[in-house]
Amino acid sequence: MAVKTRRYSARDVTVLVIGLGVAVIVNVGFIWGPTLASVGLSATDWGGIGPIEGVGGQNYHDLAAEYPPFWSAIRNNVLWLGFLGLIATPFGLFCAVLLDRRLRLSRFYQSALYMPVVLSLAVVGFIAQLVYSADYGVLNAVTGLTVDWLGDSSINIWVVMIAAAWRHVGYVMIIYLAGLKAVDPALKEAAAIDGANERQAFFRVVFPTLRPVNVIVLVITVIEALRAFDIVYAINKGRNGLELLSVLVTENIVGEASRIGFGSAIAVVLLAISLGFIVTYLSQMFRGEER
Amino acid sequence: MTLTAPTAAPPAEAQRSPSRRPVRPLRILLHAFLALVALGWLLPLALAVFASLRPYEETARLGYFSLPEHLTLDYYGQAWSQAELPRYYLNTLIIVIPGVVITLFMASFTAFAIARLRIPGRKALLIVFTAGNLLPPQVLITPLYTLYTLVPLPAWLSDSQSLYDSYLGLILIHVAFQFGFCVFVMANFMRTIPEEINEAALVDGAGVWKRYWRLTLPLCRPVLAALSTLQFTWMYNDFLWALVLMSSGDKLPVTSALNNLRGQFFTDYNLLAAGSMLVALPTLIVFQMLHKQFVAGLTLGSTKG
Image (tube, rainbow over all chains, first blue to last red; front, side):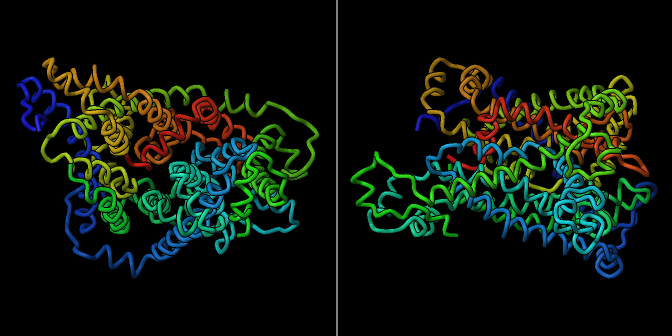
C-alpha cells in the first residue's frame, strides 16, 4: 500500500510531537497520574501536610472493620446499580421500542422523556425535594401520607433512585432509539413473513443485533451508578441513609477532616469496581480491530 | 408486556391493504400509555415552575399541591439579584467556553492523528484516552485536589496563587476529563471519511497540519457541532469539580452556586425552585434549539462505525 510508505517531514514530526505530547501530558497529569497516586496514597495515613508515612493495608482494614458508612455506601451503590440496571434501563428500552414506529406525537413523547437528560443532577436533586418533602411535598399531599421520604434513612435511597431514574430512562431511550433505527428493516420484514409476531421478532431477531448498543448502555448504566454524587449531595450531602462511595471519598477532602490516605483507600475500591467494567467494555469495543 | 406486541396483524393481511389502516384499540392503548409516561416525566418540571411562582407563606400553608392564590415572579427577581446569579453565569462562561474550545481542538487533532495517520501505538493511545473518560471522578479527585493546592500560579492568572480555587484549574480538569470521550467519537467519525481525500492532498505535498486544519476539520463540522452542544451541557452541569476545586464562593459556576440558595437553618424551597429553573434554563434552551445535535452527540459515541 502506498499509504504505508508515507514519509513525514521534520515539520510534520514537530507538529505531531507537540500535538500528541500536550494531549498525553494533560491526560497523564490530570487523569491517570492522580489515579495511580490514589493507589499509592491509600497505603499511607497522610493528612495533607507533613511527611507521608506508609501504613500498609491499615486503611483497608479500618474501612471494612471500623467504618460503618462504608458498608452502607457499598449497599447503596449496589442498590443504585441494580435499580438502574434492572428497572430504569429496561424501561428506557421499552419506551424506545414503543417509539420506534411511525406514531403521531412521537416527537413530543421523545422530547418529554429526554428533557431531564439535559438537567444537572444537582437540579434534579432540588426538584426531588419539592416532590418528596415531608411537610409540603406533592407526594404526601396527593396520597395523604405523612412519610418523611427524604429524611427516613430506610426509604430515602429508594425515592432518590427514582429521581435518578427519571433522568436515566431518557438517556437510555435516546441511545436505544438510535440503535433501533439503524436495524435493517428487511430483518423485521423477514421475521414477519416467517410468521413471527412482534414480540418474537424483537427478542429473536432485533435484540440480538443490538448487541453493541447493549454493551454501551450497560457501561453507561454502571458508570452512572458509580458516579452518582450530585443528586444525593444536593439533597442532604449524602448522609443519613444516602451514603455512596463517591460521597465518602469527597467528604474526606472537602470536610473538616482531611484524611487523604483514608479517602484514597475508598477511591481505590471504587477504581477496582469500575476498572473491571471498563476493561470488559474496551476489550469488546476494540476486539478484532486491527488497523 | 402485551404492549410490546400491539399489532400482531397477520402479515398477509397487512400486505394486502397497507394504505388503509383502521384505528386499532391497541394503538389507542399505546398512545394512552406513552402520553401518561410523557406527562409523568414533565410533571416534576411543571411542579418546579409552579412552586417557583408562589410565595413560600402560601405553599407552607396549603402545600405544593394546591390552587394558587397569588402568582408572582418575585422569587426569580430575588434569585437573580440577591443571589447574584448574573455573576455566577459569567463564571460559568469563563470556564465553559474555553473548556469546550480547548477540548475540541485538542481532541480533534488527536483523533486526526489516531484515525488518519499511521502513527505507532495509536490503538493503545485511543484505549488509554477512552478509559480515562470512563473513570468515576472520585477515583482521582483526592490526589488532584492535593496537586492543585501545590501548583503555584502567578497572581495575574489566579488570585489564589495556586491551581486550586482558580478558573484555569477548573478549565483544565474539564478539558482533561472530557478529552477522552471527544477523541473516541471523533476518531470513529474521521475513519468514515474516505481515504482518497488525504491521498489527493499527499500528491500535492500537504503537511500534517494542513491536512488536519484545512482538509479534515472542515468535514467534521457535524460532529463538532454535536460535541460542542453536548460538552457545553456537561460542563455547564458540573457540580463536583467546582465543589472540590473551588473555595471562593464568588468564583463558583452557576450550577454549584445554586447550593448557596439553601439557608443554613431554613431553606425556602420556592426560592430554590426559582433558582433551579434559572440554572436549568440555558440547558433547556440549548436542548430545544439544538436537540438534533445533542442527540447526535450522545448517539455518535454509541453507534460505532
